[in-house]
Image (cartoon, rainbow, N blue to C red; front, top):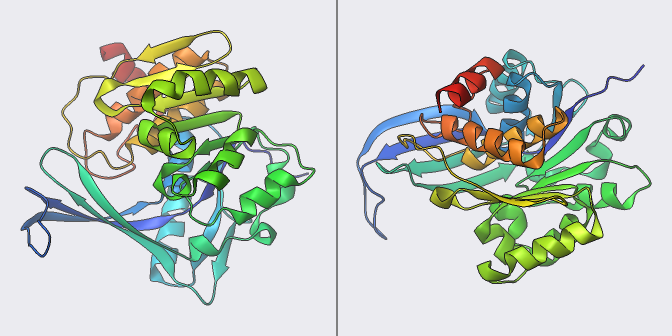
Length: 307
């Protein structure tokens, strides 16, 4: 019998190289790096790891190279108990991707991503029989979305979740078509305005139209320090941020997406899911790295009780 998963997260698993600086360099300038971190990352893998830590049965689906970085990342997925045995493809030709991240003393960051093998993911690489049985199939921040487009045009019925990130949002026409298929959309204000070619003031109307098209759809629009707005058939609710000391905002959106998926899978209301997602994000940004938290369901519950 085929395994079933709560979440299959599709996209990139990368090595993050994080430079901590006092301030970003100007053009042709230079900044002193006060610390340097070498950590596992990749938006889709981050979502898979955090949902697994929260107690869901998760798998990561993507492509890596046959190299040292790839080996390190698979070891980390093993440690995190994320399934990948028949969901990750290893390329003999293209190297594993990496991400170069500069973080200043305010926790803001600049990112340069090399997707590597992840960007060559094809429909033939996807374990379609597993996707058909998953509770959610989540797509995060991947430039080459042809495989997902083909999947969504097939006869396979899936609960599709989309957290586009900058790479998908940069192609508004294709991102818009993906959004039409998504039951859960988690995106920043910038991503939403880019995908739907609208002003921020128009987001409420666009979200209402999307929910009219699919009454089960949930949309979460993140707004940085202004919190997030959650749209569903029953209500529109604003979720405030948790006030914490910000060290590194890398992975905050992935943690938010993971929190939404975890909560909705566990039968929580969209409003409850928004608060849980905000808590996951708040825990993450208090330390360096895209997978800084939560480390477990207990970690999340302790944070929520305290705050």
